Length: 296
Length: 282
Image 1 (cartoon, each protein chain N blue to C red):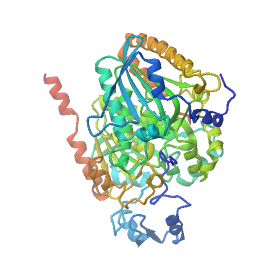
Image 2: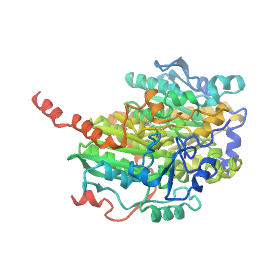
Image 3: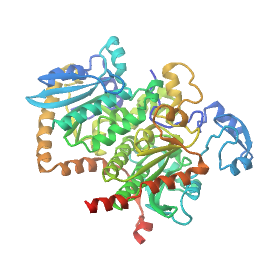
Image 4: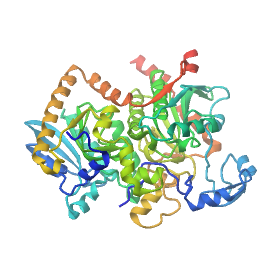
């Protein structure tokens, strides 16, 4: 019986597993010249791929964006005000080398941890936005990710604002042990309160949304949107293959798989995402509800 | 108590063939237990059982993850690894408990939620997420007790509670030690080493403010005297129910707030001054 990594880092076909054959091949391609799609395995010139919004021109796989890139194409120019910018994780279980690894990644990515949160506007409408960034430890959820997300949702509840969360994560952050598991409860609790207060929460699942993030706030949106072809699932693919002793079909745990099984409301292309969010936010604007309440 | 025992030594104890499971404890702890089946959506998962019980005359709802004691039982209960319908049954019974103002007692014992094709199709992630969220605001007291293995989200789905207790040798972790070793060191055989650095014993989790209470086991492990261990669990439940009833009478909101805060405070981070800058400046 193998339970290995079922709650955790996804490093298989779309991921960064160094021991994985396909990604070994990927690293053989000169960096910065070509993009090899992890879904259809077709190769595109990086320039063409970038011009296409980091979407595979062959199969429409929506590749990963940095949190900054995501904000740029999502919110009104200059409207983003970041929360809790200077929060950094400690080492709750004294995991060897954890501080050093974080420091390295902070320098490399310019991020303090795997999420940006803040207040922003989409077509003039206020919202709280949460964007995860898979370049920082595969956006696994530890203390900082959990705390920033929780605070952002609490802020939205206190200010009657909608929340839009772009999720991407390998799952719980192993290096923080049980403390990372508790972040699932913390973030889901914040969603529960926002929900009870009548707030709108839209979850947008991007590549990859897995493990403890799928099993907490990512799956709790009033509306759940996914980008085409992205990986969404709970257990790691290799773990499941180990359990059933056979290969899984390519589209297993894709956005389309989730839509078909009833766990995603809609699949929206990147180029239309901002427009769709704006329409949904407009349809959920609060003032009318308040007026009715006052008239009664 | 065996405070000196290492986590890997405890792993041996909780894997002992004779270690009592929820199936052993339920008849020893409760005067009556009426099992209820099914999630009303799709099926009945045998890895989680639940129903109405009487604890010293007080009606309670019991929800328990079940590990088998032999191969036949294990085939039935899938080695204690629930499918989504198990978690959905748990939620249905929790809502029923809330309706009839019964406290909920969850017995947790699982290596983790089942990693399978059908489980994914039926939304394992969503089922766990939903339980975590809904248990957070349930309007009735919830006590969770980790009997043996508390494996990641599969355990947390029944461990969002007002009071969390662990049996003395129980382990509660973000992932199984084998999984931890295989992810971080790409070597599943380093399980015992992983076990000892993960901080997953009851004492570790008391320090990390995740566990509230340690229930002593019989000398050398629960298997040496299941009755004694069951008695210890019973006295914890009595005490805890009394405490929670008092809290409950003070006000529902206060109880639910303190449940929220129990999880809210867990996290280990540094903040430089004025970190909340942007919004504070507004």
